[in-house]
Image 1 (spheres, helix red, strand yellow):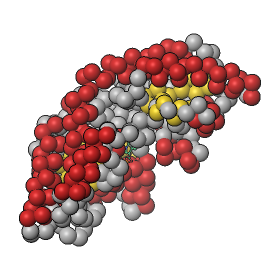
Image 2 (cartoon, rainbow, N blue to C red; image 1 turned 30 degrees about the vertical axis):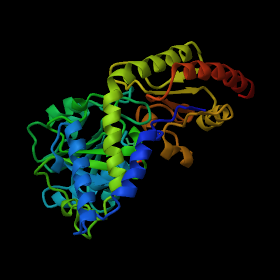
Image 3 (cartoon, protein in one colour; image 1 turned 45 degrees about the vertical axis):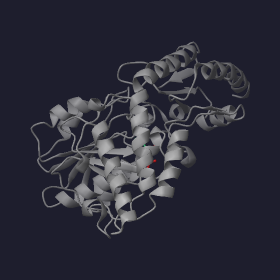
Image 4 (cartoon, helix red, strand yellow; image 1 turned 90 degrees about the vertical axis):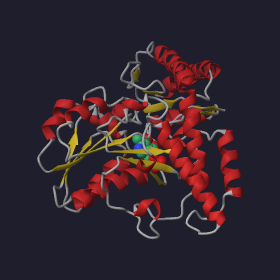
Length: 381
Ligand SMILES: Cc1ncc(COP(=O)(O)O)c(C=O)c1O
């Protein structure tokens, strides 16, 4: 099997699954329980929070556990909107955000908030001047992702931080779900960032666990009320095993980054350069400093993305249409449409997303299969 769909989800590291199992066995107490089993679980929870904070060079009380990227994004959009509604009702999100942000924004629009969409240029990068023009005195939140999940463009978080430097009343949220292990931390967690979303399964932890970074002192309304966990901001019994496994996965991922990234970049470049030889292949992602080294999105003219996905699947090679969410819905990638690419071309897009467990031999095998698939597609087009 060749798994090239790591932006949809990664394969959990075996040691992460062992940690998950060990913690489930040995630390099964409810961290809120008063007895020593609860205390043991509570201490492990605190240690995991501290480990994550240390790895990101933040404070432990700035980390709030959630069920993943979608919950973190929903929490920020709705939680900040409710918290600050008395102050203003204008929110800016980029036009290429994940549905977890965009759909939350749409929902807020139905509740009387006003949403502006910051456009991107033809390369899928947020246009700073246009974002600046959207800012208003009643703007309460700006939400821009660090790395686009569909084509891998890196967004100018540092420049947006500078733009917002003298506007302290605006909360700045970064969806960092696709950035972990792919960018230096300082590129997505600048000092100006107030909130950032993370998802464990994108960096080899288990599903259903993630976290929100919330800068100390920033206020947010909870979405989940109940027993008062997470400092009364996110009630429900904590997933201690998942959280401990995620802390370890974050450490492993960041430890591997320096060695893994150049290798991943090399693999992407080889595929990119080979595909660039074909006249009827459109490449949507670049090999460039403002693109992550692991994502390569392309299409064969006249061939719908899902046809290509299934053609590779027959060879036990797993790629995807540009995002797991749009693929089942059969919708063209929102990012490509926002870039001004016509629907018909956008519908051809498929995404290869690499990770540190891919090997060079798989690239060779992929390219061999690619030639066969391409020849077959040419016949049926
Ligand atoms: C940029 C981005 N944000 C949010 C999410 C949602 O994360 P989760 O699957 O943990 O809910 C994803 C998942 O693909 C993503 O790529």
